[in-house]
Length: 279
Image 1 (cartoon, rainbow, N blue to C red):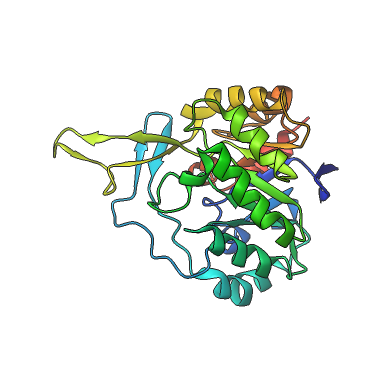
Image 2: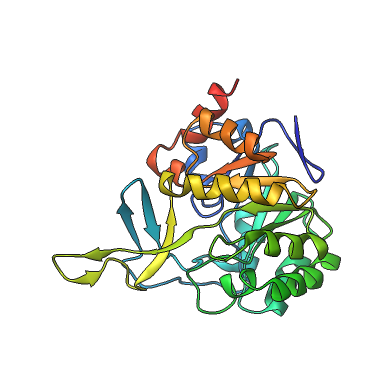
């Protein structure tokens, strides 16, 4: 049994936001009850169509994405996706994003009324949106301000997802915890770029995007270790986890649990296989 700020999980392996959708597709492949927890795709106040294509491309040992938080909004999540997820005993953690602090606050307040929602993951670190997103997560003052604003509204454990695109992640981590974060998720994707040498144009329509996959694992392990030295809240490690050995590496660095992201896209059974192979 793993306990993340009061969220009880049967194992430390969670499905990461963005690569697992709302679980419907993966439910056709295996029993979602076997997961430690499911972190939903980002939910925003209003529907978002996301960024223009192309918005994903493969890179050595990883991938770049610039999805832009595409989702069908808070109302659709509560009426359509949450009832589906409610069929499972696996804790549901909802990733929340927005363009303004007021939007974050409104979404958090609404989700806190839903009994099936076990926790909220505050996404202040997405590098693929022009407003909100990473703008909050790279500034310790803004990080503290937004966490303080939503903390009283969140009647659930509040997990803050941190960006690696900063000079010193420990400063941001301490700001989030001081403002009331119950746990931290790290890391989100690393800002990157790829160019097609045949067309001489960037491979993503937005030019830059978020790098994920095994290529960023050493960065993630290092940042988890750094943050574990300065905070006393549970840490959820994210970044290039493909095997049970990867999970153990993050736990040794100071994480209490992990999230599998890009691995789900490489192998749909990745998270399940990891759980089965954990010692």
